[in-house]
Length: 179
Length: 151
Image 1 (tube, chains in turn cyan, yellow):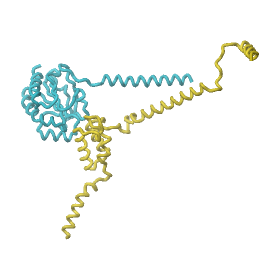
Image 2 (cartoon, helix red, strand yellow; image 1 turned 90 degrees about the vertical axis):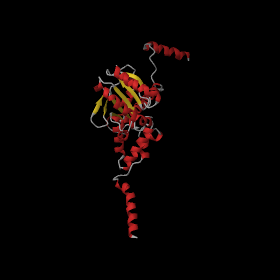
Image 3 (cartoon, helix red, strand yellow; image 1 turned 90 degrees about the horizontal axis):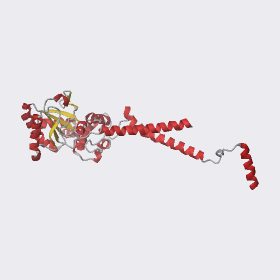
Image 4 (spheres, one colour; image 1 turned 45 degrees about the horizontal axis):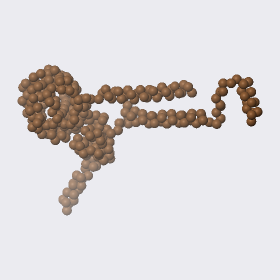
């Protein structure tokens, strides 16, 4: 009887320890929004053009504009052409644009790119894991990463075509170029 | 007359064609809506009007029209959005644990409760031996005699 009681206690303790472990794991793995000046969350994702995968870390040494979008997002349609124009303008200075297709049906996303004539690199984030790393609140959102892999400039929460974000976008690209 | 009959026949075949093309019973959007999550609002599709949910519904309708089975559609959605798109984990492989663990926990709890109740009821039984008094036999006998005399 004593052995049975002891076994019960051990099982109960193990269960509590397991639950506690799960809680700690959850708390330590919760994504917190990245800080300005801090390292940009790195990620690896499938390329939309089907040519393998893309790793943000491979762009270390280059200024990067990271834009989250989705084909179902109306403001993303508004800014698509402006982003393409900006990419054509800044690529001569070595700036790389990366579009991240967030929580989207891949077929819709490909049609979106074709329709808006987007030619810069786009990658898939169907599960939203990359968005979580960046503390995304919605789409579109745009981040700027400098040559050292740090987040610089203002984090743009909306289409870059909005008047309030237009200058912040160019300042962000400039900050990524300058540092 | 023959031309009209042929036109009607062609039209009927045209309408019946897509339905007859499926080698298995078609699934429906209604059947899937409650089992697929909207990735941006974290509710099932049938409870969401979010643009992302609407696009997924369009995708599902399109795949149903193409005779895709329920499991094919789910597999494609998981490939696109990850396993989190399913409202419930699959009933196979490691995910089976998610189904069995709660059941196991409930059973274990029931067994533990039953055992506790059984022990408790045994401890309060009328035929339980009295706790030892700490007196030796001789003293106990004399105490019994004294108590008998008092009665």
